[in-house]
Amino acid sequence: MRIATNITREYLGGITRSNINFLDSIHGKHGGVVGIELNSRRYMQAPSIFRHYDLDWFSHHIINIHDLSIFTAIKRSKSIKDLEKKYKPIIKIIKTILIKDKPDVIFLNGTYYIPWLISIAAHELKIPIVLRYAGVYTKETENFTPKFKKFFNEMEKSFKKRVGHFIFPSHLCRDLVEKEIYKKSIDNAFVISNSFNTKEDTTVFRTAERRIAAVGRWDRIKNFKEFFEIHKMLKKNGWEHEASFVTSDSKIKDMPKSINRLATMTHEELLNFYSSQGLIICPSLFETFGNVPMEAVCMGIPVLVSDNMGCAEILKIAGLGNMVISFKDRKKVVERVQLLCGQQILPKQINNVRKILNSKLINAEIMAVLRDAAQIE
Image (tube, rainbow, N blue to C red; front, side):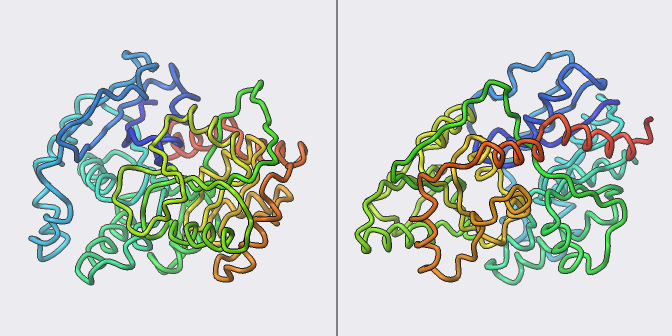
């Protein structure tokens, strides 16, 4: 079975991490993978993140779309059909790739415009599609202008008529999509968590230092302004600590100078960063899963996550419910930060999370859905 999938090279992106885990688990098997990358940058370096894959197995296609901004295209469009017409040349290129490489199934990640474009091309060629949710884009654009909100909502809803199988990383994500996007239950919907690829000799770290950190892209829905406020309240209370924020090169207003701002890291560098912290804080307003806190816990580092994150389900099952909280009551959050920072996680609890997020098990479940979609036994 040959698989085509949309890929990204952003180290902090959940799609990148989940894709790499999946590709690593099937490397050299199942007829190969067609990686389709639609890149909106004028300049980019070589994608070193994919260099370890056999060239006969992994076919990497890069389509540069920096000259066709999605926001500019929407401004100039009267309808979703009009928007689709503006991207016809890109859809045609994608179709040419799919015709040449002949995948049996399309494995899409996310509901943004890049998976949307690939889904249109695949549907026209009658190739079965599996969509793995990685962010509910309608939710992420709630603060956009009415026109942009309308277009992105229609874009997300349009997947329903082209996608045969859905994979959701949490029950929270599936329930919200069924209730607020499609407004009905979804057939062929599977809840499969994102995985964490733990090596057998991975060290479990212990730290009692007062170091707190947040990691992720600068976006309203990630709610990192709340992390800034928590840091300021801790300092006001006289709780001495070091705070760090790992993010991309976005411009950030009103970030306290007392917080260390760190650039995007490779995955290995990020794991080492986790191991130097006493607590990873994730205050997202909504998140379909949350790779960052799950990776940190697998390394033995305590976390504090919003109850609006899909990974909260895993923490509760693993006996770490005290690491889940509503960020609406800042005073309670600050108290919990002081309690959890540097706290040791029991080996049994770490193993519980590692077993649930076992990469081999989860990727085998994904492969089963892909085979079912492609009707391959």
